[in-house]
Image (tube, rainbow, N blue to C red; front, side, top):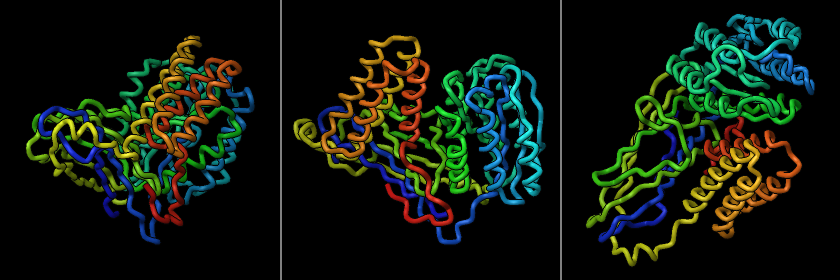
Length: 426
């Protein structure tokens, strides 16, 4: 594949000659438009379905079966599929095998009935074993875990499970998690997905399941790079203060990025402290690496930020911030406030929730004339209006999921179809 376009955009177009400064840098990684013969990668999917007793509520199981059947029907005969079901016990409904007999696969899925409690870890771990057993080099190997409840049997510690998800990635298998309703542990499912190089979805109503499965499948088919990592190498004296996206780190210390998908640029913001400079030389070097899911090869590209003029502090302070950088910074700070609003709602702290929503609103309002932030203000209006009518658990999940989407750069950016890739827009 062609290398993605990498842009390093500083919030101000200069450094300071007589004082230290804090400089925000927008990184934008844009996949190149593939040619018209863009082939989709081979898929090896493990569907792991919660069949605990609560899945009968609101016809969750019926919709889960419908969504799973949809996934099976979209597979090619040389793709691989396995199906694991769990409550307090785990059963392998379909061992990893080619998706040739789709009618037979769908029929077996349709026989699943809810019962029992929730040994989420054991179900997910078995899905991981199934996917690993049929590993497709140069393909997408992923566990799709769907649950509506808290892990209440077997291993339940979120840190332990997330660490295992990271280990599974090292063996070539990623994890996407889908939480249905208000009773599951969103912090667990989000951390599993982030550590597992996959996606996390909050599904308020089970009727959304088919659409969400379709979104996930489209993203898998349009994936250009996985196991994306970003290394930051500041010049002498330059300090990385923080990464505003709150990304997880690989064991190497590099940042773990979302998969590179056709039509979905990845923006992130790094905040630097830059010492006084007489020349405005190199500030930061980056190393971007990823696996090509079609060849299995590892690719590495490097880029540099430097060459900015050095000017006195009085002049530097008067420079306007670049609007696109300020907008992205504001979005990420809104995301942090939304996450804190969700945490406050979770413990029933209504005044704290309102305060965090007001903080988010003030941040979004600070950038005048931004359509993106105007949309976010409308969302914040809806959130505040719903605070008194929604259960605390529902509000918390909505707020934290919105935050997750911003931090992963996945808000209102559906992937383009690999069959008609078009041009990737930043």
